[in-house]
Length: 79
Length: 79
Image (cartoon, rainbow over all chains, first blue to last red):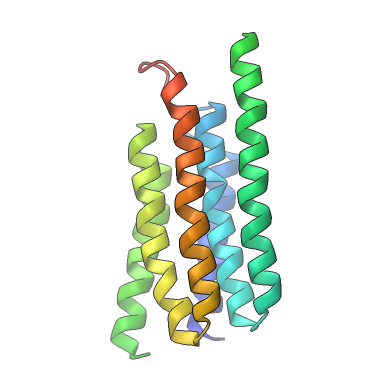
């Protein structure tokens, strides 16, 4: 039980609760809350020394955020 | 890493994660995500993965800038 693993699990749980039950139910708040479990998962991967998985995960998170921002922009423009 | 530094950086990361959930304004949420990032990066550096630290330090601000594109378009009242 390294400190990275414990801290990653705590942040992952906080982020999952925040993304699942946000206080203000807008798309933007959910998207920002989705960053927190990404940090938690990054710490857990760091605890297991998975460097390539960590780099891939960070890159894919950025690309998926870009795609989600485009989708939310379309949705907001149509409303 | 020393135990006192582990506790200190873990506290910074947890304050950022909880602050993202409890802040109501969207810019305050983004600033709290930055605080979480500041608590996570010393753990990556302490494990010796400097290349991963470079990648994360490049991609997380880019993600913040992409989300700011979405923040600009929204009205002030429905944060």
